[in-house]
Image (cartoon, rainbow over all chains, first blue to last red; front, side, top):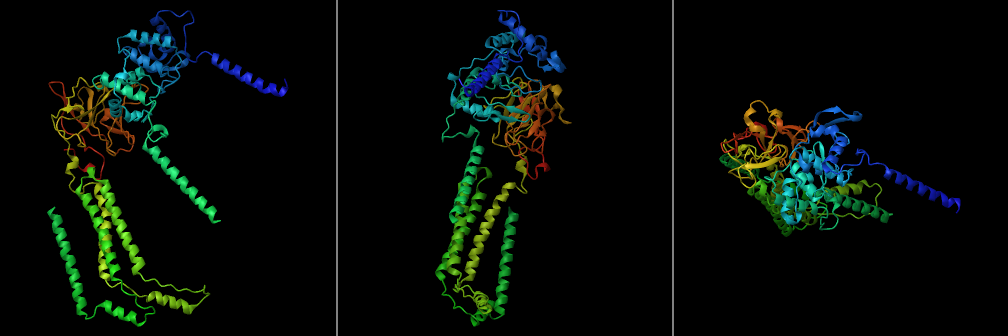
Length: 262
Length: 345
């Protein structure tokens, strides 16, 4: 084999080894029990909680209301978790909202660092702290897409946009809802994560919630009459596009005319 | 209204009198000034008088009248319908037809009634003689207009009507004198709050961290003063302005749902899950992000709104339902020129 062929091969090999090493690194930030993890779900949850959550949420979910430096001088502060129930824990952990990189950061849809078993254990532990709302079990198949759309525009679209593209309120970003599961959507409606208001069963019944979930899931694959959706963000983008196209056409026409005159 | 009739009558009388006086003075002079000027131009006319085109004149006059008619139609349509139900297609058709007819009239006028002279020559160097000749031709060109007054009259009717049609929408900026309806709201002391489906809103239902839309039990829900946004705040967090201490029983607050900036529905409520590090609770308007603080009486904390959100005093009746304890703290709805001059009634 000639040298010329060796160099790219070696580079590719080096890149592969580098990638493998990065992937083999332990997942950042999560502290896991070093000994054989206990079988009992709640116990594993308690150990994970002590290692990953307690610096902000306090011992046994009692909360830390005044920001204070904890382990590694990281400033910690967080709401108490007694009584938030399995629903809140499940939503915050499965969406990657928690753990937060910084107490002032907004919880965002991130890569989930915990395994499914770990999440189940943590949810069981948080639920064991005090009685709270259980994980809702929505049935989108029982909902109606049409009433889901009207309920969504009434209660949700003000922040989340009509096709659930997300947006802004003053002081925070509103996440798009694509890729969320039915359970996560139902949990968010009932508990109101971060700045979102929560909606009780008196405001949105379980049947209505099924319809809303059905509609939000349908926004993952919206039909786009007319073809190009331009991000599904409404008439302003469409108008801008029409204007820009018109201006470009006009410029092209003027240019053609000039060339013809010459 | 009667003032307007008197004013219009006076204006008609005045105009009639002025016109009459002029005609009388002209007849006194013996000869009308138009005739004398015609005589004078006849003396040194280089180009023969064009044949009068009476038919074209008539067509132009009719076209101008039609233009004026459609412009007047615009004003009538505008005046006939309430601002919310203006038939845009009718308004558009009126103004388009008016402009089209006037344009047609002007085009006809320019092509058929304005004499055009052509002087074909090689490019002259400098010919004072010829130049003077051209100038004379221009100065003394003939005219085929015989009914100048007719054209002037119809022209001013068309122009005036079109001008009125363009000015009429200024009235949409708000009523000038009769502003009382803008301050009227359906809320009175004792009016029950109901939800979207008409059920009375119980104080026990209102939870912290959620938000509710409410309407008066009776009255038009389309009225701009009707919709409310109801939220509940921890009573210790309340910093209401002086005199409003009793307006929020159990920390339940009611505000007009109509933004004081441009009249959108204040449909966004931001509530912190953990208030130590998260933004304070706020009502946010999705149109231009005016942000109001419910804990301090709806004061503006961000955005283009110039007035706080009007607050409705609440009370809880014996059955535990929410009722209004009076009217709003200020006029509801978007801001207009006189909004600060009155109170909600």
